[in-house]
Image (tube, rainbow, N blue to C red):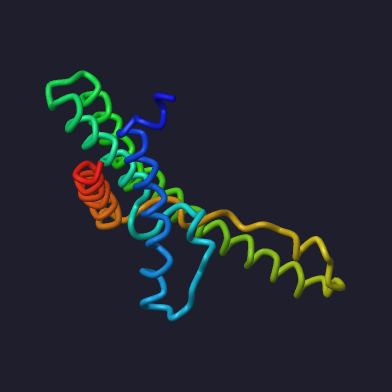
Length: 157
């Protein structure tokens, strides 16, 4: 099957997996806690989205050349993804933080004003995801990871 020999695809997928995995030990350093939820979460250091798109572009550059239309498509796609990660998605995370605080404050106010008995549904409420986007340094290192990892994989294959 040709899909198993598609180096750009596998380089991108391996970059995603490696970037997600490395978030756990990197987060352990300052917190001294292993947070295995980081394996499947968005945001954080390094950006797995950036690692994936740079790995894809690097692999296509190695296989097809820098003048290839496939490389051009992947490079533009990568730029858009990385710009989005540092812009829109990061600001959506800021908005989620403010909204979560407003909801918490409102719920506290309602609870204090009306002295209602504890309700089980309050425990079931889900907060909005705050860690959506990336700081520019996280995108940079995600991108760097994708390039370096793909160059390493290319020499191994």
